[in-house]
Structures are given as structure tokens and as C-alpha cells.
Length: 158
Length: 106
Image (cartoon, rainbow over all chains, first blue to last red; front, side, top):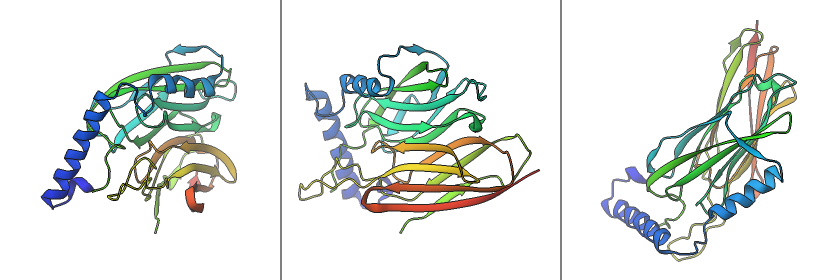
């Protein structure tokens, strides 16, 4: 990992690049990155006109992240996971990365437990949203706020 | 050079919910970064992971550039019968990698 690079210059460059990225994200009025609006569009592509209700979904993510390059994330949905009543899909979205999607997982009654975990990148302090699609066609969601001190995605190689 | 690591319990009781962990070494280049000459670095990511249990698909995930380098994904399944759990990763630039694990169900 770059953080463990023994050369001071490289590390400093990385930090500067990270800070510059943060600064740019704050100053920009109309960021090129994903905005809550683009997240809404991405969510709309998945759920269509169906109502999305709060609940059933829980997001396990650290509230304060030092390094946005790898953030542990786990999504769990309350469901008996039977063939009549199960979770069909779990989608995770973000507000401020260059792209609003994080992961879309498809599962079925054979999963036994509707829990998926991964590691993802965060370009900025933001809210992430998880949406579960149930077998009866309903959509449930949860959101979580994450504060990021060193952003991912924005830094260039140096 | 890619390498996949998968973790499936070798033995399980019938009907038991087991956790499956997968990790694959991959750069997951987002396509949003620039090199030191200011040239954009083209996207190179894994776009999909699928998992099948004795030939039947049990899990599929679409991955996006927001997934961290060396994608790590875990999920669950019910141990139904002895056999093979197979994994397949596909991605940009014709990336394709497979792995499998045996499970004995008692």
C-alpha cells in the first residue's frame, strides 16, 4: 500500500494530493462528481416508480474513516429468506464519488441469510444508501453517514 | 498475475447457513485518475462476480469502480448437498478468473 511507502516524499505527495482533492471538492460549486441528484437517478433506475420505505436494512460501516481507499461495509436485511419471502437484491449507492453505484448483489432463498459485505472507496465525506429489493416487489432502504479524512479516487499518481 | 482466495467451510450440516468469503487480487483502476503526465488512466476493473453451487447460480454481484482494490466480497448460502462451489470473476480487458471449493454436507 502507498501509505506504507518508506520514502517520505511519496507519502507527502500523496497527502498533498489528498488535501488538494478535499479542497477542490469543497470549493467546487457544481462538482463533476456524483451528487445527491445523480444518486437519485441511479436509485430511480433500480426501483423505478416503486416507493422505497425506510427499514429492514442495516448498514454496518465505520462512522469515521481515516483512509477512503478501503472502507469495510456490510449490509444486512431482515428476512426469513424462504422461497415465498426473500431478498432478491441489495444495491448500495453513494452521493459524492465520481459514480453513484457501489455494488449490486443478487441473491435468493438459497442464501439463507441476507448479508453481504465488501470493501469500497469513498471520495469524500458523504451519505451512503442501501436498498433491498424483496421477492414481493417492495423496496426497503437505510442510509449511513461516513466522515472521510483522506479521500480516495481524486488523487493522481505522483 | 491474478490470484483468488476463497474461504468455504469444508464441512457443514445439512441446512446450515455458511459464510463464503472471496478475495481476488486486482488493481480496480477507477478510470478517474491521471498519471504524472496528466494522461487519464483507463478503467480496469472487475465488473462481475458469480457463484454457483453444483451448477446452480446462488449469488451474483455487479462491481463498480467504487469497490476497493483487491475486491473482497462475502455472502451466505445454505449448505444443501455435498459438491462444488464455483466462483467466476469477469472484468475489463477480457479479465476472467475462476476458482472452486469442495464442500461435504452431512
